[in-house]
Image (tube, rainbow, N blue to C red; front, top):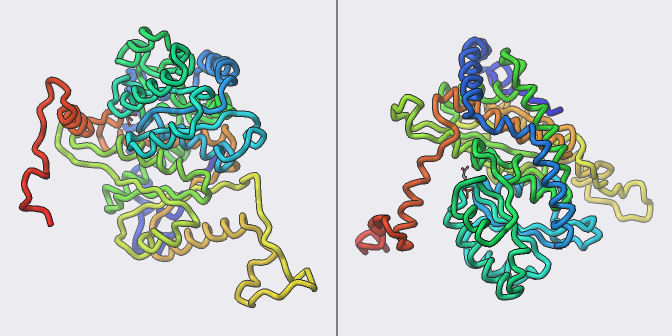
Length: 466
Ligand code: PA5
């Protein structure tokens, strides 16, 4: 079970000046009844569709059967998707498979396939992936909830041709789609080309879909315990049922961050795991928090322009990069650390003092010997958290017991629940993304799609360039 430690959000645990007051926490707890009721009503009305992802026994059976059948016949899985259709899968692979997964040989991967995720239309990445992957050995999973996203569809058209050039009519046997059960161009193509297709539940938005077939199929294909992910997610949902804010970790996380943003101007929310294996989780969280909470209008249609800015960081690496800013820059941040108690592996730092034949280390390095890298990482987290507190900087920590599918499922659902609650605190709809529509329409226009008006190009005048 994960633990949220939040004492360092409060003045009395910081420098006595900055941070939230304990009285503010009491106020938040009193107001939580109304927030909880709103979330419950909206959930009953079907808006909070991601809750239903913890009950997917049939889907899990279908995915497992698929992974054990068709999946076994391929030694490379190529995912095409973007945003919520890619970031969660990247986080799962990064956290739950060996580091540098694709570099291991078959035995090193327990005979599960390699996994490449193409999430952009940068021709250099696409061309390089297609040059190194063998089309005879690949299974391509095209993931798009809407089934019409320009980037993913363009990738698919390229990949489909590449498969066809190599395999002819057999190309379709190397493709599986994940999309809306009824709507969209991808669904049409599935019927036309008889491509096996898994459904994205219509009530689950892209960035909340990693625990749907969107993330579960690629995860199962590379041997991740998908039932474990859902078991952890279920626990997070159960733990977010209490009406008492102090007993409801996801709701408390949301309330504290909202209060820090709107009351103290702490509008930059950093997720800083102390392990490389959660680096991609921080990227996933960035999208979840940004796209869900950054909104122009509130639920009543009033213009509000709200939204915290999420940032990803990794300890200890970013202690030598962003932490200077976190320590001494403006008081506009909340840092969430994520630590893993048991990473499953540790590496001893050799102790030369025990070997009379070894040359002595310079005295300045002697303190390191006899410890492990895991101990150093833990010490760096403790020290950074304490130093931030002394400098009056708010932080909290998510303590993970280990990095199993069960624990990661709980963490993922924890952040999704927190996002849902934060939407209610901010008074906005966390499930839409109207802000990305204008950019899409102008892209269509630039690509000559009928019915779309082009915008002026910034290159139209040379007056503003040097
Ligand atoms: O969260 C979202 O809704 C978006 O980030 C989508 O996931 C992203 O735009 C991709 O959409 P789709 O899955 O429809 O291709």
